[in-house]
Image 1 (cartoon, rainbow, N blue to C red):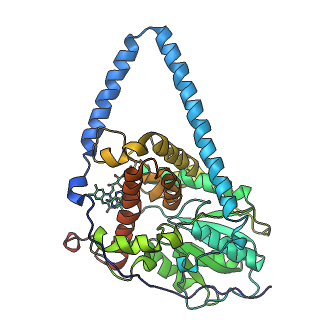
Image 2 (image 1 turned 60 degrees about the horizontal axis):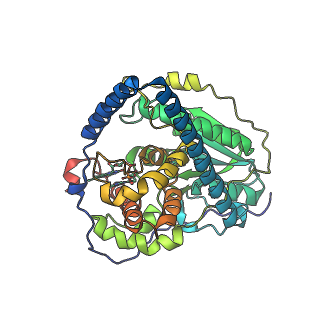
Image 3 (image 1 turned 45 degrees about the vertical axis):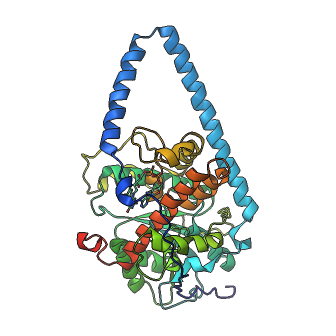
Length: 415
Ligand SMILES: Cc1cc2nc3c(=O)[nH]c(=O)nc-3n(C[C@H](O)[C@H](O)[C@H](O)COP(=O)(O)OP(=O)(O)OC[C@H]3O[C@@H](n4cnc5c(N)ncnc54)[C@H](O)[C@@H]3O)c2cc1C
């Protein structure tokens, strides 16, 4: 095996500086989602009656126009994906030629060196369920390329998670299906293991001679416990590292303590954005083949195995998967961004990004959304700045709160 790769040392640092400039107070920003839903349902009902009364000629031409519009939209959003692909290639042709910011990475296990005679590297995917624009995936590929080893992606499917319903799990599973297909195209086997990571992942690592495990980061209690349980059960010579692929400024770098509001974390994040808000290199077709192939996945069986509330049905407006997430980003930029500043608290206007579902499951990187939205700053300065405030400062403040406050879900700790 080539020279041993070292996993990075755990790091945590913060930059000082607080700013008390005002943005809208949280209380004044609460949106009336129920009213909006009701209004949109009423409106939907109305437009249906009107279209029923109109002549068939008009409906035909309307249908044609709609089809044409949909085709144009699809082409335009396809061109966003193409442009993004080119941007990634502009950053580097492969992650091995890219200057990876190691502050995104921290060592979880005591062992730092990749195991001798390793047969592969694993990216244990959890919170960031996408292939591209994922620093954890990229870091795992970088390690594997450096060591000339095969790369594997493992996802551990649990039968339930907190209060999540089939609406959440259905969205997640369909997104994972796309991940599995994309991995196949890149010669990176994707393994869906059924069960808790502590019960299935260490065995997988032992059985297949995996030399190092990379995972992503979530500050919530349950996934933090998954990581420490896996770390305890992994063979002692197999290192585990964590990469914050969800926040733009890694949570442990943004601040080393609990921040009390957007006003105290804003400057810390903005001061470090230039260092972290960079273009991503692409994940490339992996050149090292593995003897271990991915088992075919029976997605229907996975779906059926879930022990979740099935009365809360899946929604139609939010199509799962990274490609659909990119389409939603495209529609935000072209249709709603211009109204974001003025109308983001107005439930009667379509002004929001609607990106929450894709962000939540990590199917779309917030960093990608910011990189694309920022291109419109000279045109819509207030809207772009407003979106950065919500999607970066406020979102990352939420991660900071959960990471540093053990009672993040107890009402008494909100005050
Ligand atoms: C007073 C208030 C408090 C909120 N607190 C949270 C919170 O603690 N955690 C959370 O995930 N969402 C929070 N939200 C965000 C909000 O409930 C939904 O995430 C958002 O409206 C979903 O729509 P969107 O994806 O179109 O968001 P957009 O308004 O287009 O914003 C883009 C993304 O930024 C993030 N975001 C927006 N506003 C906030 C915010 N205030 N705090 C944190 N992230 C934000 C979300 O990830 C969102 O998807 C809060 C909203 C308000 C008004």
